[in-house]
Length: 433
Ligand SMILES: *Cc1c(COP(=O)(O)O)cnc(C)c1O
Image (cartoon, rainbow, N blue to C red):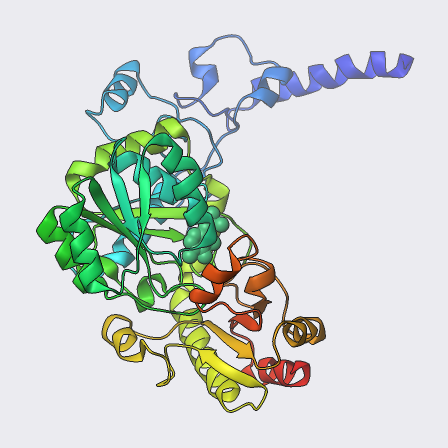
């Protein structure tokens, strides 16, 4: 105790001298060196508090992680210009951050790749917040959303429990039924958006994107699609006339199962401000760390998706000839009802498939427990193979009749086929069957 009382001031003096004598070590400030503006030396404690000298003449080869909530202004005039929108720049990370913006712009570019659209994009805190921010940012109370019954479960609940109670009602319809969709749009002028998900989870049922986009345009209705299952590598809805694309980047785009985030991509200038204002004020922005992880994931998206597709195709063909399997849902199989439509609007068939075990629920649960190499995890799009039993997990809260009407029987198993060696995946499933 006593020795500390003596030693601390000595240490303090030593370091104070060190800093005040040093000409090369400077603290980070808006000026070159603090000592050039302040004649008195900076204390040890203050030195700890301030940012240290940064070597900003170097160029990082990889996107830096800007873990900062705010950004310094050189002059107060710069701050005013940025705040009033006269100059671009960053002020506060809820409004924008260099790591987050770079990744959002890259994804927007990939979704619009090969078109002459001028896309914009924002990363959000999750796939769900991408959907809620898009809807709140584009629609008003009294507007309605026309959508399908077999959406991602969370989206259905969001539409009914949250947006519905705010006065933005969903109408569920079979979006494959062209006559019914046209009739509904004709009949209800409050419908301001068609929201779709194709291929749908877990049966991979597809909706004709171009047809929906054309019809909606002719009626002045917005269109939005959840492109999570495909990624822009396989399906580019903007090129087919869709107005907005959302993703849960948590899945294939990140691909490594270590971040939760989403993205909203659009190109219509008149909606840009409304979406951005909602994002910034509802605070549904993505954080820089997750954005940085997504950026790493995107680098191998092309390679990963190719492997997901080829592994899923091989597994689907294997399962289709298995005696204990009654049905395989994979658009890469000629037996899938939407095989031709998928070929028309997708560049591959993706990594998701589902299959029905003939013997029903008990056999399906026994299969799940026998799986060793693959994982039982309630997500999808990771590099490793993930198996799920929809009836007892993702669709547990869906009424049995409705669930079965949407093709989700008690014996149905969903597989998010990973990028491992396909022989290891098949061996595991073979022994579990
Ligand atoms: C996972 C998922 C979502 C929700 O995304 P989160 O990142 O979990 O919020 C939405 N749509 C689809 C198709 C999904 O698979």
